[in-house]
Each structure stands twice: as structure tokens, then as C-alpha cells.
Amino acid sequence: MNVSPLDRKRAAKAPSLGEMYDLLRDYVKQETLDPIRGAGRWMAWAALGAVALILGVTFLMVGLLRLVQSELFTASDGKTWIPYLIVVVVSVALVLSSKARIRKPSLHRKSRSV
Image (cartoon, rainbow, N blue to C red):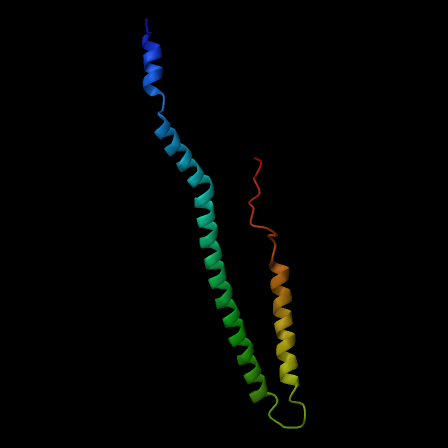
């Protein structure tokens, strides 16, 4: 049986079953596990940022409450609820202004057509 040099070259380049398994395993890892790990890291940083933001805003609102109570409403004339109302109004305004600034409805990137 005569084997041409071209056929020998093709046979030498043909991947073995083990190489194909390794290639498939690496491809599945690249396309599934790596994005999941990246999303997990992104979620961990987002959760940490959310906790820090919640703590910071809470401390600011408590500080505002103490400031209003001590500087503006020192008399005990039955209007002790007004500082709480002021803090609630400021908090609601902060939430509404934050919600108005959110422009991106999802995390998916839109492809730009140039």
C-alpha cells in the first residue's frame, strides 16, 4: 500500500483521543467555569460595596438626626417627632435621586455597530 507524503502529514497532525479530550475539557472550562468565577467575584465585590454603602448612609442619617435634635429642636414642647420626619424626608429624597441616576437596566453589554 502506497501512502502519499500528504497523507502521512495529515496522519501525523491528527489529534489523539486524549488530546481531543483535553481540548474539549479546556474549552468547556473556558466557556463555563471561568465566566461563573468572574461573576462570583463581581457579586462578592458588589455585596461588599452595598454593605459599605448601607453602613455609610445609616451613619450619615443618624448623624443628621443627632444634629437636628441638638441644634434645631432643643425645646421639649412636644415636637420631638419633627427631627425624625426631617431625616425620613432626606432619606426618601436620597433614595429617589439614586433611583433616578440608574440608567443601566441590566449587566449585558450592548454591541456597538460601527
